[in-house]
Image 1 (cartoon, helix red, strand yellow):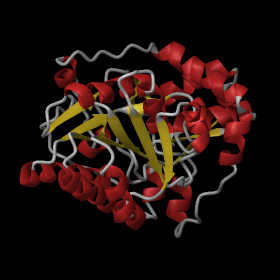
Image 2 (tube, rainbow, N blue to C red):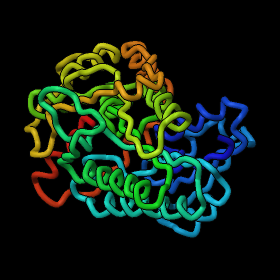
Image 3 (cartoon, rainbow, N blue to C red):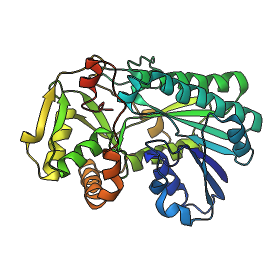
Image 4 (cartoon, rainbow, N blue to C red):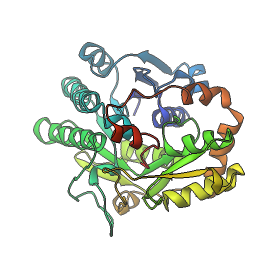
Length: 340
């Protein structure tokens, strides 16, 4: 593994992954391709710009010429670039389908032409849909319930079809909810943290009983790296092993760390599409040697501390409004981010 193209490398997860791989002397070149939309920021890469092996290209994965030119220079691809905010997908479904499905196809077409050695497609546990009991392994049916999850499920299927039809060496990773420094404040943890630090209220859907598995971004990156190095083409790998919490339990942890009280919590009616519980079996990746290493309590405290020390990074983002919803139901549902 000498040269690597990372799409969406200026986003939350992608930037952590780039920083991680630059620690290895074997890496000769990493090129980040990012359109720098609302959730992608060059600042996320920070000191990576000081490393001569890292190259940054502002561009769109839908631009076939740019993608083909870059893949001619790289032997591995890790594909993070995606529209990922569940709430936005409720009223911008076409954008999610275009970027997540057509953008993935554009990359796969170029990977096929250029004969890449490995193509890692980064996905989500949301493609499995809600599970009231048990856990989904990689053979479980895909049952997404919202446009974001549906667009990721579709891109997963397209990616795997390129393995079976054309022999493109595709691996797919599906992780649970990530948290950590530099995450965009549209997501529940940074949104709640930034509001609590400002003395503002936070909102919970229903009674706050939606269950999610929380995985530190470092552990997810470790799992993706393992798949990049050792994963078998044509295989899917779940990345989990974090901490299962209801949204109310998560809120309690954040209130404690931020020094806030339950009087800052508001309850609003649940929305139609709000999956009760996600759960994955990640024993397949464990068999390759994966084990999450970050303690949840310590990781969450470190995350809150980062937002406390870096208001210049998140304050402008938290003031960026979402597009106007088109119905009263949408307006209500957009008061709180999806717990995913």
